[in-house]
Amino acid sequence: MSSAHIETGSARVKRGLADMLRGGVIMDVVNPEQAKIAEDAGAVAVMALERVPSDIRRDGGVSRMSDPKMIKEIQATVTIPVMAKARIGHFAEAQILQALDVDYIDESEVLTPADEVNHIDKWAFTVPFVCGATNLGEALRRIGEGACMIRSKGEAGTGNIVEAVRHLRTINMEIRRLQTADASELFSLAKDLQAPLPLVQEVAERGELPVPLFCAGGISTPADASLVLQLGAQAVFVGSGIFKSDDPIRMANAIVQAATHFRDAAKVAEVSTGLGAAMKGWETSSLEQRLAERGW
Amino acid sequence: MRVGVLALQGDVREHRASLERAGAEVVDVRTPRELDLVDGLILPGGESTAIAKLLDTSGLRLALASRLASGMAAFGTCAGLIALSSHIEDGRADQWSFAALDVTVKRNGYGRQIASFETPIDVRDVGHMVGVFIRAPRIIAAGPEVRILATINRDGSDDPVVVRQGNVVGCCFHPELTSDIQLHQYFLQIAAAAAQ
Image (cartoon, each protein chain N blue to C red):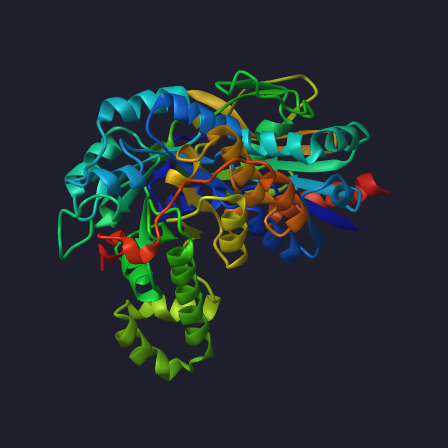
């Protein structure tokens, strides 16, 4: 056996890690103690960041990539994949995160965008990227730039599921519309979606995105996780919803159980019982800043 | 004959698709009752710590240990191999496994995601295929009862990457992420013989 034919960074190994996270819960953590709680509860990955979205929303100011020290401490604490966020278009932050050997980069609207026109050229990296989307065109533009996983954006840090539901339903409805179009209509639909034609044709044929579709932004109870998984999300990101709740350990465990048994209402009822208060949350109309509007 | 895919977390649907293309009747297994319905089980890729936790809370840990002890066919890929192994290095301190394969695995033994790779592999009794290794476990020791069906050479050592012991097969990579169903067909033959 020779060791000559080793290929790293292929689309298959980059998308493959997203496939492995299916049915799981990815939790935002701000320190090694929270990372340990997340892993103990059965999280499939953690997102290492300095402030959860609800605190970013409260504090204001420019929000940037996390301190490498904190990312390294979390990598040293848990055995599950560690993700981290770069600002939209900030390829230097992404280069740093790749140098730190993070497992996935989230080019995220939760941080303050660094480029108002261009997202990162994600094909240039060995590490895979996840990006947010509010509709199908946005999802396909990100995939065209090399994203290996799409998460519906929702509205991060609100504890309100309404935007996540809107975005998931929009993406699914637009996919169904492509499936009912004939081949000659796809050219015009690609123009309307402002998305690459080959990706539009692929989605029309497969009936789903070419990469896994996960859900983020506003999930704060086991019932929320069950809802978005039944709407077609394949895994969930939970940000402020766990560590801003009354009892983070129980909430983390309960959401993990709900993600596995999301179609079993009796099981979701059992894990939802006596959890204490979920995060307080924000009504969407009261928001000063809509994070989902960042990125295009 | 009916086979199952352990559907607690991971790339369940890829395995289901490969099995269906190989002509099997397939069910998802999330509960002990669903396990009773199958003659063989695939343990998919995913996060081994999360799957171990969910095996415990679903009641499947005891039920599956008992089926494995009675000779049910099983096939574990990546995290599934870790669950079937007898010793785990670099796992959580409390991480347990079924010990259905007498191998020691080192979690993420080839490195983190950036080091994930593809490579061609010849599997004895099965055929030639591409191995997709994602944060893959590395088999660092195998007992005398274990048959090594394939190896790869990394860093000067010939590592086993497909192993079999009795009716149990373990694989460090992900055949389910390719269109190649040879290993799934191999597993179905074992399951059919074991169910007789």
